[in-house]
Image (tube, rainbow, N blue to C red; front, side):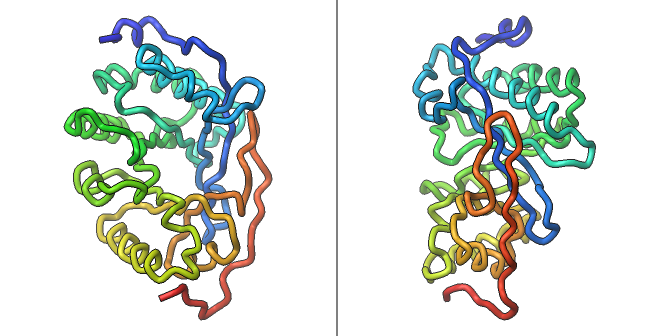
Length: 257
């Protein structure tokens, strides 16, 4: 158990930086959040960074990602009512939730970044070695006023099961569900069901991976206001990208189905 490392400080054994990708609120026409995405020190993609993560350095990498994301975000956007900072975390790199969150909270305190505007995402695709342990992580984070999210929701076969088990604050729909939703009755029907479920459970819903105006219009017609994708902006390393705001869906436009 590397709890002493959490207390004494820990650093990933390789360099990396962060790019920031906006999640926009279509209805309010503002940036709702920026997701911090790992990049290599010379701009290499996330795959280059993740290829260097091993079982031995996974904990240090996870902790370093959180701290670096908070430090960089604090220098770019740090208003009390400003955008949320979204950080991906590795559930299997968290040993004792109350202890392993220490470095995250310390970084927020040191930089003045509001803790209640930090969102921690875990992906449906992450192999969960202990479901009860992950549930304890989510409960601990929520108790400390951190926002929790399931990323890539719908990418695997356990989506609804995860939702019942963990009850996060936010669901991020996998891009596979939104791709060509304007022309696909099956995807449209599934998304309608997820939108209804999210409403009943009082969960925020984010559609990610949006690339076309047609997808944007279809998702808007389904009542999804929070969106992320290359249609609006591409991630920018160590900075905030300019946002492209497409025209809203024409009145009366209905998605497929």
